[in-house]
Image (cartoon, rainbow, N blue to C red; front, side, top):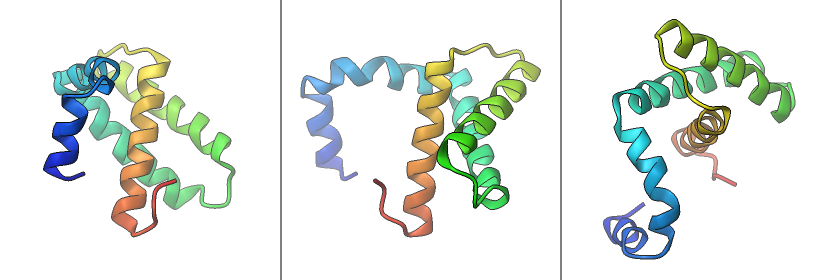
Length: 100
């Protein structure tokens, strides 16, 4: 995303929708969540390559929840699912596959 695309998002009505997510991800818990989600999604992509998306998502959710609980962090399933989806999109960009 270019600087101008980011600015457009900030000054548009979409910001009202995205602001709570951005605020959460800027917190220490959000940064830990992002790190754990990226690590977990990468591991699952390597170890569960033939599994369907739903199976991968369920496994990622289970692993991320367990790791966060081990760190004393309690977050809702919807927030964790958002982090999983963001990590999947980031992994696609890094691997050269276009995000869907």
